Image 1: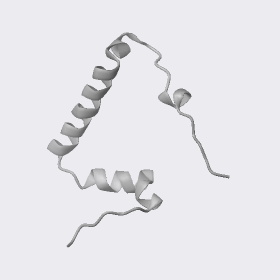
Image 2: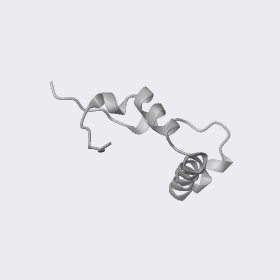
Image 3: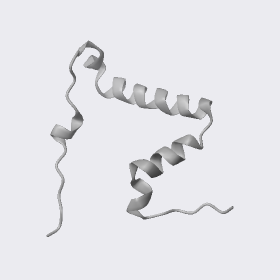
Length: 66
């Protein structure tokens, strides 16, 4: 089977991401989770001290073309 690059928004759905994640081995899944955790700690080492961290969506601005 030949893999290809997709530019479809359907490939970015939560269902598509879950389907991709399920194709990974346990070791690959754990490696991804460790990488995300390391990324979080590198960018915000104080996160472990917070009990009620706010989601990052408060800082994201969505722009759309009218």
